[in-house]
Image 1 (tube, rainbow, N blue to C red):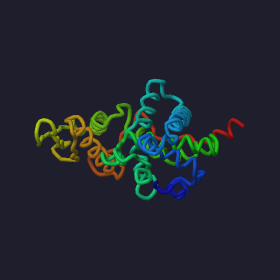
Image 2: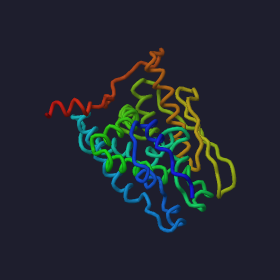
Image 3: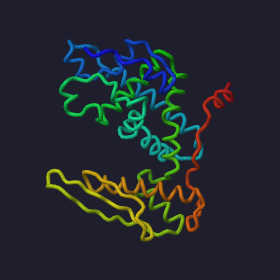
Length: 262
């Protein structure tokens, strides 16, 4: 059997230690459990961690944006708590990312399970569930803020659209830069096409992305273009003057909120 993953995974990445048995369970995918005599899987911990993550993110958004209506708060939360976002956080968790520490069955290993977004997202939630079980809600919340605050600020800065194409269009419109255009090419056989999209603003190519669908490629191109343009605006580049945002990026200090409510 594979050796237990080092506790340093959490100590270095998020400053929290877990008991070896609980940590191993959090990292045990069902494929590994089934191949090793029916060991406990991380699915119950995932269920718990999903609830803890949702509570902390929802509370943070509620306190940080007191003037936003329920519908927009829900969109913000959905942009933070989703498979792709969680997988991105998991890939940056510790040396080699969370995927290098997963306990996977041979079949799942052979099909690239260590890089599957669904498995990474589920395992991250299981880890958060483990932190909650061992350390309680206060520590779990601190871990979640450490991992997700930058993402929440980034999502809020994008604005009401909450998808990259809409966000790019809002940014160009508010800075009198016209409507973005997308140039798309495709390659490969019908059953395995690859699409390449380039986002063009004012005749300038600002971002290029690839994907298995036209939509995915355009979203990736729009993200790169948005970040390029946003950086120029923040740097005060001529012709890209900052505009007022519908959402002012901020996050409430949970410790300050506790003091206020004490």
